[in-house]
Length: 199
Image (tube, rainbow, N blue to C red; front, side):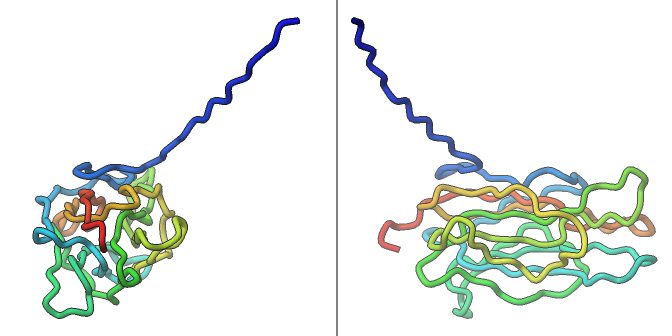
């Protein structure tokens, strides 16, 4: 009789996780506007909070832009001396609430709420809101911004490794179109960095 030896094979699948020095990018649902330059946190600091600039919904007959800008806090947002990074910004709307990770946590991922482009040109809004993920929370726990949830859908989640944090930000923002349709903020990219192990 022949003896069969069965060797189990374990396959690990990692989805949407980048490692130190790599860039994570929002899912490209829209692509209007120009990319600004990468803005980096000062050496040794990492994103621990964020704030959104949002234009409120104006109604069916008025041009809406929704999300215009995002700022990351490179440290504790409660400290007035904490620097922020933002790259390119739209100029419509107002700055909302500051959201932050629990003590000891860093932002290591994000998801954007984006409205799909219309087949027939209409009032496009592109990005409407943000969710950011902290590395000291459970994987499905997030900080949701105070943007607009009226339009669009939440898109794919992009994350650095759990031990890492966002340390640089780049945004794609459509400039003022004059009498044309405006969308303001469309996409973001961020760099993954490694905070000190004792934080």
